[in-house]
Length: 321
Image (cartoon, rainbow, N blue to C red; front, side, top):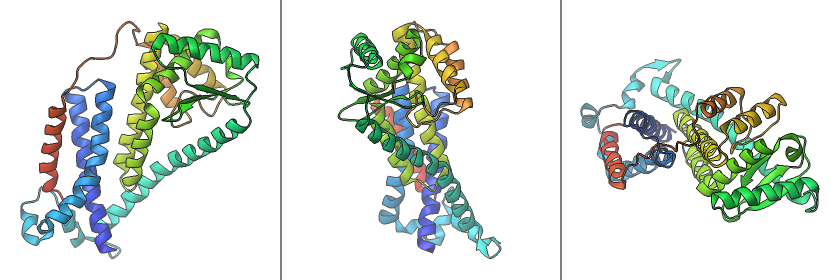
């Protein structure tokens, strides 16, 4: 147990430092291109999982007493202080681990619930000649053609919730509630479909599974959970922006979000499920301020720049244990 706690402490320290440095870079450079922001956040989540075990195997001397004088930060010294007989480092590690689990588990449970619901939808889908299905299929094909995307498979089923999302990596499938074609006016339905096809074009389901795997690897780190959630939130913002540019009507997405939120639906336009009121408000504010004729900032960062960031972080984290 002490060895496990020591490794968790190092992983936790590395994760916090990496996430903090990357967030500062994103804000100060700034890095505004969504694809590049995603790369940096994935890097921040993956680096501790790779670097800490590597350093443990290749540089065991980092745990010697003399190295503590060179280290920028060492959590081992916190063990000199105790609370109810428990070392302060151990108490902090397991407290953070509990917070990490509390942030991670709701998203994992939600994904499992939606996976189960999609299985039910596959068995209880609405017939292809249904009026709502025909309308949805026509809108999907039309918007996909406009966006230059191969029309994905469409699966429509009966549910009172305003469901509209896509799943699948090798074979993308848009899953929709039959009632959503009746509930949303044409402009809002078109904008919602454009949002989902933006996810398809950017392969966001694959990105979301990568983020979830990295979050599971850092289940004990609440900062990593926040970074992962932020990355998914930014994917939603980018899909909103693309849909607004394609349709020329950002207000249509905002109206669709508000109408479904008022109805207290369980899901709409989200990879990880329920849109909290604060998240809906933030997305609507961004949409209201969005000029659909203006694309996202084109600032890019070369792979050597990302590699240099990794090298700098690696050097810094060598002295963090």
